[in-house]
Image (tube, rainbow over all chains, first blue to last red):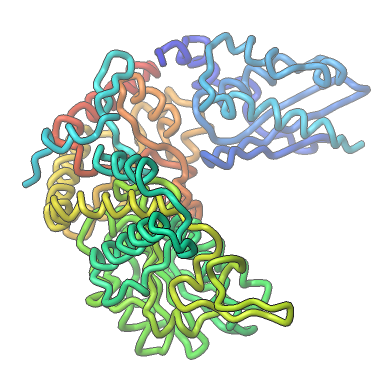
Length: 124
Length: 422
Ligand SMILES: Cc1ncc(COP(=O)(O)O)c(C=O)c1O
């Protein structure tokens, strides 16, 4: 264990997360839970013609899970659904740019799992 | 006072280093470390005595059976139970409570009630919730601001339909030591069974089942210096005698025919299948170790540590802890969170929850200094809801901890804000 996971990039996304908030009438949404630590995350999407027009999240979590949600929502905003469908866990972990211990991997991937869940049930 | 330096020498794992630092283990509430005496007892069992118990005619099997039954007597003695038959070996507290929910639950009817509390571990909530299917109602005693139980509520909630009252002796989050003797009286005056979750009391203080007058007491070996996979259900013999078995199979029968079966006497009635003999032997060695120190001394030591730790935390400024301040009614466990310092610097996400720094980050950063604390809901989500928080960090103490450990812990807390640049 080192200090490395709390790099400036992570801390910035933690303290001032991008896309934090709710969307009133989303056409895709999902709530993800991390049962071991009581973290929760809700993701809201507006999808129009296969494109993610808007995405926001709310929730409570540790620096890693909040930063990861911030970074992930930035990654997918404006992209098409195929991009999200093809997105691998490692793509997000690479984007975070930190070495994550097995104990914290669930925190890092909570946003990823919640997003995948959301796009698997899109309402029109 | 106990000699921590001498005790530490008995715990080989405490010699490990992390990041070049002496390990500071503050998670004994989750599981305790094991002294060499326990490790050796288990190894000695396998080297010299291993055979299946209660079945063999040959000498080795008799020796193994003897060791297993002597362990039962030793554990019985430890909690001042009058007969070894009152001791049922199970896997852990969770299994003991599930056994009770299943067997006592079978006799409950639509509209019967169970009283428990909001501070329980999930293992004293979920098994009882299974009974909701039959229309059994569960009522929860609330807590006061200081983390003690609202004792008045027992008299308000109890009715003639209350068949069971089940309460933890010591909370694994708040540290509160409940007045279980008093609660037991309330239960018995009403003709209700009284169950005590002793997972956090039996390892840390003298517990006397005769004095408490509980009908049942559940606890885990692994939290009291013993191995994992062995736990105890104590029950008053006359009640155990009347109860149906829990699991069916070998060991628990008197005779079996295709037309049906009859049950063995207690405690074997509740011990279906080959038991954890190694575990019982290890637990017995743990009991000997604790007896040697003296449970009064264990309790005094933890009181001394928790007093010091609470004082340091209060001085630290910026940390909220949960549960009573008075160490007379508090065990050696401190759940805590960072609070509102420099609010504007943190995401609204966390401010909404009234938490400054997430317990996960606290535990990760303390780990850099080899200070090992737990973070999360501690299997007490209803209590987290009641406190209005998602999680806490938690430091807990045992016989191998001393004031130095607490100083290291406080120093590491200082580091948390530095690492997070708050
Ligand atoms: C108060 C309390 N009850 C029950 C349990 C469950 O113990 P086990 O996991 O050994 O069954 C614990 C363990 O954390 C506890 O602290």
